[in-house]
Image 1 (spheres, helix red, strand yellow):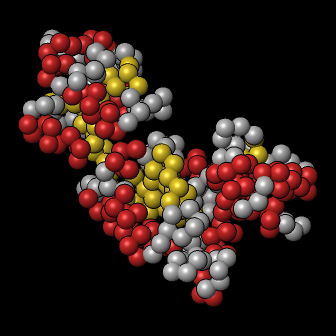
Image 2 (cartoon, helix red, strand yellow):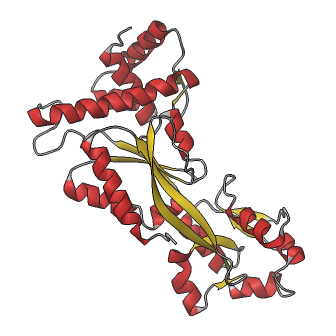
Image 3 (cartoon, one colour):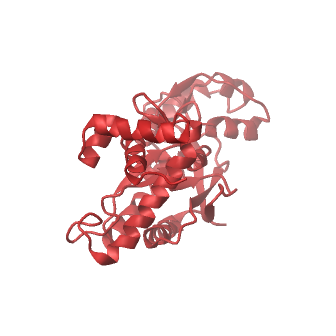
Length: 303
């Protein structure tokens, strides 16, 4: 069975841009034309492929097709680049410049070492990025769904069709303000005080604080929580005494040095191994991006 390329492009654009209207603008057609093309593709395959909403997302049946569509577009753009075709690459730009590279990355990596990798790739060739911020323990799921072509993840097991590159380990420290420690942990850092002392968590998926608590106390504790979905906001919440939390050592080291923050229990870091998973495609831009990511991650712990 052959798939109409215009229908496939419309399907991919809706999922990439989140709506039929945005896809229409990207494809320079009307929303009605996009809707008709997606409907035609769904009728041809006999499956609902897109769950309409804000944003539109792929159904389970549409996930594998989404991945196929993105890979096909990337391969096609790369193949047409040497010919300098106007539709493939405007003057002075690479074929992949207008095709966003969908990447999943955890917030702490994005706030520390990851952006230099993107900048390094941009210095060598024009590329656009579509970043999806996701917890490192869950980012590989976006690869399985076909929503991204690469991910920074804590999962060492390759997603089908992907390669895995070890990056190193991010070190997290349990920190709080001196005032917080004086108020909530004056009787020592132990099971009883930690069960009552508020902690900061990034979101519902964030298990770092509970992982550290289990390692320290051998118990599952459920202290009061504040959800703070921002890496720098997370540090600010600790500085203001809102709660304690696990923060990357590369971000809080200066604050520890000057005494604005303190470790709850010195010498008890939590290290999270990180991996780079990407589609197993022999496409120069993917290979170059992988080299840039490996170079940028050189500062992570490897011992």
